[in-house]
Image (cartoon, rainbow, N blue to C red; front, side, top):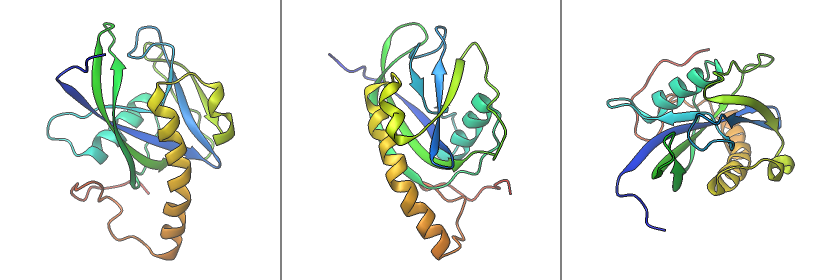
Length: 169
């Protein structure tokens, strides 16, 4: 299969609540219809990767998250809303969900959500790359948590060469 020449850049988040990660179910009107995915989407011109990840997560879930470390980047095939195959560069960041708030979804884009343990991932149909990415999110999350306890990172808003930006408390 030939890969399209133009690659779309996306910023996505692994939103954790305890030992579970948030997956969103794509509607039939959305890109990659019927599949489960992480929150996120396109990076707008002039936006840092961390800013795009935060904005897209808020748009798709209603969560105002604090973006943590970048943990993965992959190029993978994706199906657009129009049904055309395209290449996507996904940049993935860690973040935490609010403790008890449920995601607020746009039904045109997502028809459901699930908080999934690592052992439950195989029960959700996703794009092929997502299994690897979610497993990497779980594996690197432990290291991020240990590092966060060991030192208070002064550059909390610094990800992937971004400039400092305000983060919610």
